Image (tube, rainbow, N blue to C red; front, side, top):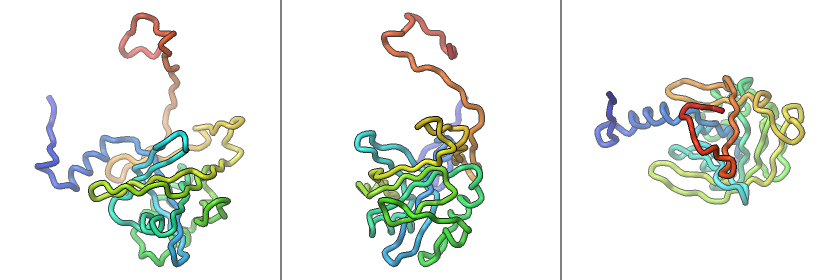
Length: 208
C-alpha cells in the first residue's frame, strides 16, 4: 500500500516539506558573500551540488530572494564553506533571517579569514572553502539557481590523505526534513563495476 500526494491538492509549503523529507540527505552550502555596502553575509543553503566538472562549477538554490542572492547578483562573488559537525550551532544560527545590514559572522560569532581570489571572506573554522565567481543565475519558479565557477579551493591540511580530503575528518553536516540534521554515520565502500569486469550475472542486494 502507498499514500499518494499531489502538488495540486497540497499547499506549496506542505509539498515542499514532503520533498525536503525525501530528498535526503542534502549537503549544505554555507555561503559567504559581501553586499555592495560591504556587509559580510553568511547563510546555509541546503540545495547544493556540483554542476560541472570542466570548468569546475558548483550550484546552490536560493529559495526566495535572500541576502546571499542579492549580494551575489550585485558583486558576482561568493564562497562555499563546508558545514561540519563541530560548527552545527553556528550553521543553524546563520540561518536566522537577520536584516541585510546585520552580518551573520558577527551575530553568530563566526571568525573570518581573507579569501585569495574573491572579496567575501572565508569561514576560518571551516575545513574547506570554495571561492567562486558568478557563472549564471537561473530563475526557477519561486527560486533562483546560482552557478559559481570555482576559482580557488582550500582545504585544511590535517584532513587530507595526500591530496584527498578524508570524509571522516571533514565530518560534513547534511539537512533532512523538518528540523532534522544528518551526520556522517557509517561509511560503506563498494567498487563500481566496469563493463569489462561485468561478471555475467548479478545478485540483487549483493555488495560483492
